[in-house]
Length: 159
Length: 124
Image: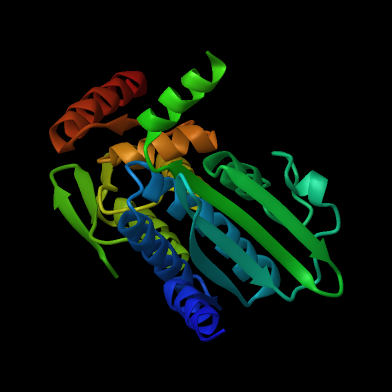
């Protein structure tokens, strides 16, 4: 029980939260994300890809809602490590999420490049949005700890 | 503002010194448009090596600088795109037209020399 509580605390200590209230906060969010990605061992160009995706979702918050938060969370399992990015706002929601992920969408005054671009830079990408709770974008970038070991293991399993 | 703008003959050299916020990018566009008129510059070089991210907003702003400067009689060349940033821009599928890029300052001024000579000939 005590161990569990401590693990929980550690989990919180690892994550970084950046309040997004104006465009200067995008600079902070990008720098924090890049620093965390490097600390976690992501090879180039991943820290830049992650920072670029974050820049887009954070700008969406500033432009369309005005305030929100970016949470950066390291995660790992047996053979992978990764970084999860959660962008949260309590705004009016995106009316048509499918459309927002199409390149030509400009439903809220944007030029419709941001979200589809961010999605292409990350490995996993999901949006939950409605008028009551606002919008949450969750995206992940991950790497196998040992790419070579993974390929060997896959090959052995297939043989 | 963290951009140093120098005059070098007919050209303006804008060196971005650190990552920029969106408002600073917009401010840079105002400054360059203004300075092109004041100094009757024929060309602009923008060194973006310090930018950690070139996303959809920055790309749009750079395109806007290029087009605005052209209406003021100057051509623009971007230099110093970091390799990781270049990869991100391609994976993002950002539309780079009508941006002209060069690897470094020398290549950029050589390109501007060619571009502005062409303009002079067209003008005759």
